[in-house]
Image 1 (cartoon, rainbow over the protein chains, first blue to last red):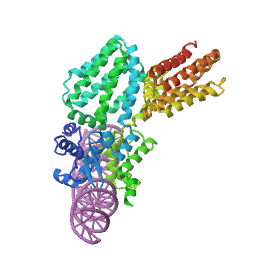
Image 2 (image 1 turned 135 degrees about the vertical axis):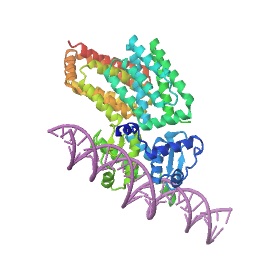
Image 3 (image 1 turned 60 degrees about the vertical axis):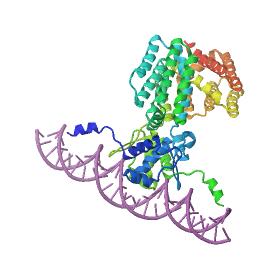
Image 4 (image 1 turned 90 degrees about the vertical axis):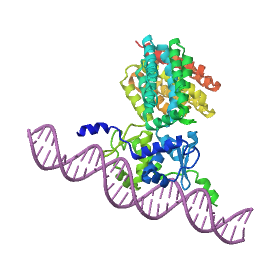
Length: 242
Length: 242
DNA sequence: CTGTATTACTGGTCAGACCAAAACAGAGGC
DNA sequence: GCCTCTGTTTTGGTCTGACCAGTAATACAG
């Protein structure tokens, strides 16, 4: 009997994360307008029927993601879209000491453009088929709202390019650079972005299509240009949420 | 009077963010090994002389960034090392296991060409001065027969280029890729090569000079071309051995 | 009307307590 | 002896209520 319950219990949702989602929802619906002040923590706690510590954890989580900004003694504000400027000093230092998304993307831009250049030179017909398959897989599946699945397939796509170099070192490095997108910080940023601009998914797919085409034409310039476009879109997700 | 204090008070550091930084530090120094369990929240709070809520906020912050992972009833685990650390560590092991210098050089060619492209875009005048200095240093010293010193300066040169990107990840990766030249296999190859073809040193210096010039002209194409020439020379070293 | 001092409000921190889930250890059955 | 079951301990998750420190609005004096 116990083992059945265990199966359903796969995902544990902390109360604070539920509260965070609710707050996000209220921001999306415009009930908490951008730039305005959030109700005091005590009031939110009362309204949602939870304790203040839970609300605090939710708020600090959203603060790290860049949605909220707190000013001690004043209140908590809904951040303006440009997150990079809005990240509070304390959050900034945590990100700097770990891995800032911007730095990782910049590294990807530099490294992957070199990789794609090499890949185009060395790719066999089979490699190109795999790359095309990785792209098609993404294209076919119904991905409505499933941003995680969408991102995973994006990862596979970029990885298949790296594999065309037939160089273990390059593949290993790219794997590490790509793996970061699973982290909660990135996932939250993605969700927020896509929910606000659902129409932005198609252009990204077009960009990947462009890369596939560039491989088939063996046109490195074109591929690199498309790649940079691709990564710039991700950057936009992170820093320019409108 | 108050307005003066207000200026200095621009940065506000919450206690939880300080704790987060401390925990990050302990992870970096290896005091909290990767994959292991963090001490219980209560213990950390006691050790650091703060309350448990503060520790909890710090932990949940690091959880969002992806450094920690908590399992209710069990403990908090260091999920993965930071991307930059993990990358350089993994690249290191691959380099150690790899018996194919060709693979390493191929990776360098792919990666470094992207890096140099970015570096030329972002380099300040100071950066270019450092690059030139790294090159000159090599040129001036009497290097007759001292191939190790010669190689070290070559490493410094390439590293100074990576540093112009101001990206820790890129620098970390390049450091690892460059460090391989210290290994006995490579050193032996170098010595035998130079002893057999002493006249080959000058052309390599010319190549580096070309890269410096390309930086000063902000000409990425030229720099990448010179870089490939540089690495091809090393390749030649390796294959003209038999 | 203006400038200042007070006051109410808000986020930040703390202490202590309870709950539920996971891990652990020891008693029991095979 | 090995496995299983159970009770205890440990651990994270949550709650209450309180105090502090900074902010901002307000009341008051000039």
